[in-house]
Length: 317
Image (cartoon, rainbow, N blue to C red):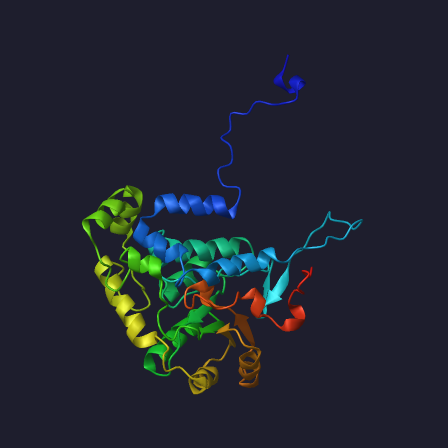
């Protein structure tokens, strides 16, 4: 008698290993040494902002419509003038080669395959030109800005490579106090101890990829991707692109120089959003930098206009 007669079926296929975001997160944690994981997964100070970013979404829920056809479902929309099948962009992440050697290329290709776009970081582990060539579609470019030749050169490279949308990050006046990174030595330069070296050695696949592919550095700053070049590129980023003196005149200079659509990323105040639009920007990205800059900032979702905020009893959307 077949097994299906008893209400079940046998299968020789392996069960699905990754069913949720948390499944992928745990797998990444196993793959990476503590030093890199602290950079990828943690935030500033006591992580209050980091956790509240997640909790903010739990305070909202969806009320489904009944008796409507769900046979044909369509999530297509337009973001920054670009038609996308999925209304989610992949956010910019610096030094992705620390986590996986093909990080930026893989992210750009994955986004394109699902009909959306990747926002390439200034501090990417693959160059602007390499990512543009590999993915075959026009992605967006995230800029750590200052007025001057270094910023101008990055903007020119992005435009010439086909990046027509610029997202200018304005919420990094100084590096956030990321206690996890400090605890595990993830500084500039990294601080190595015998225990940290031993922890890295316990992740041989990760270590082999670092040595083989040499994709650790910020390749838009330096010509090499080696470990030594990574230190140099991080120093360049902090020296040339930290934004302690950034002001509205700098933003106006970038707006005048950039021919495409331009968004400001890192706005948390309504009056600053209004001023950005008055300056000629095309939109704003409400963001607290993923909780990586200030450990007591409000959640990005809670920083939206008060008319969209939940009531004390809990609104639904």
